[in-house]
Length: 383
Image 1: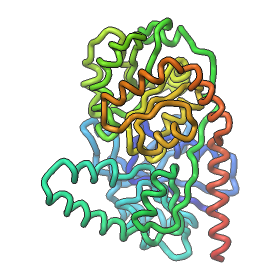
Image 2 (image 1 turned 180 degrees about the horizontal axis):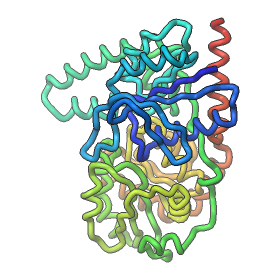
Image 3 (image 1 turned 90 degrees about the horizontal axis):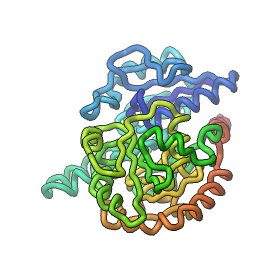
Image 4 (image 1 turned 90 degrees about the vertical axis):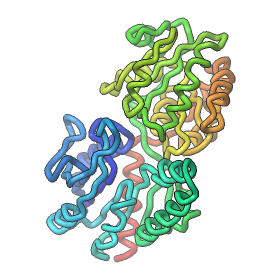
């Protein structure tokens, strides 16, 4: 069977959606009875590689997003239509389908039309924009949502990686919403002994608590709260250290911070190095309240590291369900510091709960076996 994934909002340099497509391509390599193709945004029409060993993905023109231009938004439905005509996919999945949802309505009725809600522009961008402005913004946002929501009524299946976002879509009248958990690479992210050498490499003291933030440094990730809280966290009696890794629009601000006990580690390309760092930290910090899943939170939990998380989104859902961390009221640096203070004395207890949670979590292979099986089940029922 031919499968085509279209990701409308993608960075070739990082992010959960990129990891998702890399791992999905690996699954299809071991299932040669199927064919897997991916299309995403690029500088123009051509090909793009997500990793050294990945087959190239087809690209259409995408508008650069953000000052660093890491992400692009696909705005080339003509190239999509050409790809569908030439390759005749039987199952199409639209990732981040807001703009591409309208195009997907034109797919032949014989094609199983699915979507994966990797991010939610409503909660991440439109709601904050409407809140922080004049009254006309609220009216405009409601009108935009009404139009965009109408584009999503035709999907045979909409995948969500958390109950948080699934419930959000159902409340807006979206049909055929199902939850599936993101997988995890347990060969990389698993509980292991803390490595003093890894911590020393980054200028951290192994004899002091280490708190790690590993994620994109953009405003929707809650990094303003992180920046505000760092000096207060460093002043706690337990003398914790804070390390920030990642890149994004706020990278210059975190790079410029100069405080005893604070380290900016840049973006870690090497996933094994990141896994060693995550497992060597005492706590993982997660400030985003609008994650549709929170892959970095899962990576922390599977590494046996407790998490201090904002109480919203998929990240907060994982911490709440696993019991392996502390939650704080999203947007409040004061409550964030209090949650860190509560978590530090019981980091070992949280670690044990995180390990148990991670051991029971499905791998990427198990996830994609479930996902593809469900798609084939729906398609067979229609025929």
